[in-house]
Length: 53
Image (cartoon, rainbow, N blue to C red):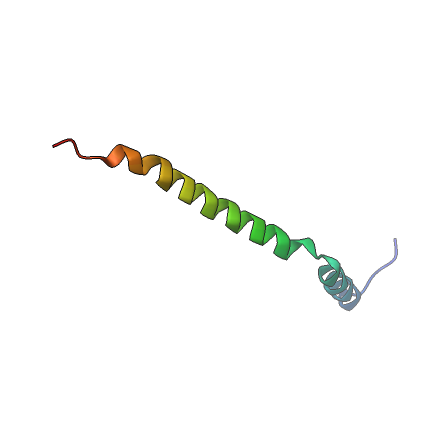
């Protein structure tokens, strides 16, 4: 097994991090999904808050 210096491992990790492009798209999809769930819950639950006087 060959010994790899730490600087080579850090450089390889930095190169791999630059090649990943789906991170931002996944973040946007998750945020939109959470906001949509909150708005759906608010829309469905607001009908139950009617006051029967």
